[in-house]
Every structure is written in structure tokens, then in C-alpha cells.
Image (cartoon, rainbow, N blue to C red):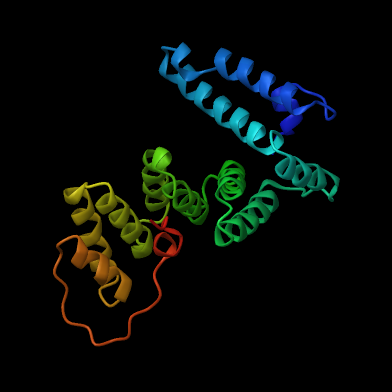
Length: 219
């Protein structure tokens, strides 16, 4: 993971105002809308994500203190170790409903090990809690499914998210596939029914919901 102070170009003694100023200048200069070339635009999007992660970590007292404490810990030696640590802490933050921390930690997990489907899935679950990042959540679930196409739970979560967004046809397609993969899974069956997909009767007990159920934003 990049040093957040280096990302923003500020010293470790920088004030909150200096952090905000550095972020504002860099975000404006490197905003994706300034680029027309698709490759450069994609790179700019990644740079903006890194800037935003750094800003979120350093712009508030609690986040900055935790980040500074993490810098003092022994360094993890491989991307896999960094990703695994970030993933574990991200899930803890998600359980504690600390959404900003969960998103940043899970972004780090995906960044360091982009080929791990569970990392994409967990990040998507966190992003789905915020209506402003629903589109990215959908993309994250689709990426998780690309990496693990036979995972019925991922497809059920995507169907559930499509239903929430009113995308009934897309929800139905994912629910149908999830049901074919796991026809006896109670949660898959429930989401399939919500999507209008019929399932054979099942007398088995209902199981607890998946990640999207557990972490869905309450009204």
C-alpha cells in the first residue's frame, strides 16, 4: 500500500487544513474528466481513488491516529499478506458498521490481490451500503463473479442489488443462475422468489442471510 502522506505530497506533521488543500489541488489536477483518452482516463480514476483513500485516512483525527499507528507496526512483506490483513480488518470494520474504514481497507485488499474473488465481493458489499457507490458495487460483484463464476452466493448478492435498484430483468437472470448452482440454498431460493424465479418446494430450515443481508443499510 502506498504511503498516504507521499500520495498527497505532505509531511507527517501536516495539519488537517494542509491535507485538505493538497487533496483539493491534486484531485482537481488529476480528475478523470480532464482526460479524453480512455487509457489515461482509467489511470486518472485509479489515481483519484488513491488520493481519496489517503484523504479519508488523514483528514480526521481518529483515522489519522490509526493510520499512524499502523505505520509503526512491523511491515508485511508481500502483497498477499497485505491483502489478507486488510481483508480481515475490513470485515471487522464492516461488522462494526464503520463503513469508511471498511471501504478503504477492502480497497487495499483488492489493490494488492486483484485476482481474489472474496476481496472484490466484500468491497462490493461495503460499497452497496452507500447509494452513491452502488454502480461501483455492481461492478465489484460482477468482477467477483468473473473470478468465481460458480459461486451462487455472489450471484444472489448481485441479484439482490439489482432488485434494490429496480433492475428486475438483470436480477432475474442472476437469480436463475444462482438457483441452478445452488437449488437447495435457502437464501438463494428466497432471492430467486423475490426476483420472480420459481423454485421447487424445500422443507429445509432457513439459514442466515449473506453479506448483503447482514450489512444492508437499515431505513
